[in-house]
Image (cartoon, rainbow over all chains, first blue to last red; front, top):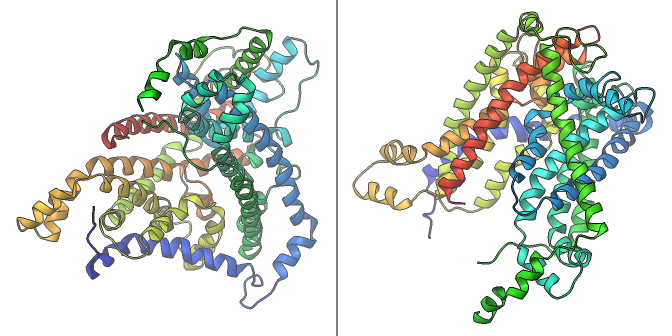
Length: 286
Length: 291
């Protein structure tokens, strides 16, 4: 259907929504990048902020600390979520219930999950009581207020996010394709490797990338269940500290820009991998 | 075509599909998967229950279950953290921001859905940028700007900042709904002599009611749980509920866990309610848009 072309008055109707975005998003974004090239509280041009970031260990270590926390968690989440959602694909009784519970942590959000982790995984919490009860360990494990606390929080939210996407994706792949392969004599494993995996590969990489990007920005879990002074001192922790404690927006933004750059590099790597596979729809043709 | 259909209905194919070899490998595979599912779901349910028990439990140190149940902690937490006040502040901010976002985004969404002009698709993708990019990158400069012009730590400031969450998302949702409307009704109204204003108030907005409802609920929930940008510009008395909960948890060394879990619960209950409502809305929308 041909849509009518816009007249001059129509453009005016675009403004109510465009102005807030320009003022609250585009302008701050530009100003934010400019801030990183200015000395604190003054105008002028300097690379000092970046030089400080990459020479002082308190700053540059955040890159490794964030990646050391987030990358292993992201791969584990992917393996776990993929295995579960592959296992429960298709229709059966009770699937809605399982799927709903898998996604449930997303509804609660990071703050509540953090509280739950403290209460559940603390030294005298249910998790340690259970492990000691069945005799696997003698001493309770320390799983909160350190690396593992943040790791568990990331894992639970990551699995929920990946599952929420993967369940739909797997159900949209036409089951006839797999049946065809099996009827031609392919084994279960060959069907998975040669038919199912190539079809889901590009979407899988996309959600993996989205999840990784979100988790690189981890903040609340790193503060509440982690140890923000050392092990879980991520990009966001340092950026917030600079902004809220020292009101040094120049340095704070420098940290944010380095974080965004790390996220962009992650996207670039994932898109490079994605290009080599099949990109398109594998849903049912009716 | 005929050949294909006949293949699909051959009993032999169905036989292949139905046949399941119950070898050792398959049993091990299902067992491992079921164990993983059960372990994950147990942890998720356990975490939720433990927060509930702790909030309503009497004394709970090393036993499996608390000694008894009481509302005492919950009431104490409600008073000590002034949760009622923060609910009021949050609603005030989020409701105003929702209304303003809708008013600003309806005309824009209509033009983007109905008119043809150069770079239209580019503009539509541009509207999606604010909720796809990480918040932190623009939140810090927004905070520095708001502090320098004195809008930070004020209620109007918090309402304005919420527009960047609300406007792009409601434009995005309303475009989908406007595109599914039948344009012939608008042509008919125009041919019968309706002016622009009448066309909008009598024809377009009434048809858009389901879309506006969906957008309202979605952006309300989004704004309610917005965290990063609010944390950066909130003051001691001008905070939304999630930011207040976070600030208490951050310096929680000496507080009794029962109080903190009661606090978490006051945030959890509205979130659960929202999840319920949005689930109901999305099933309604799917029926309506026929997807």
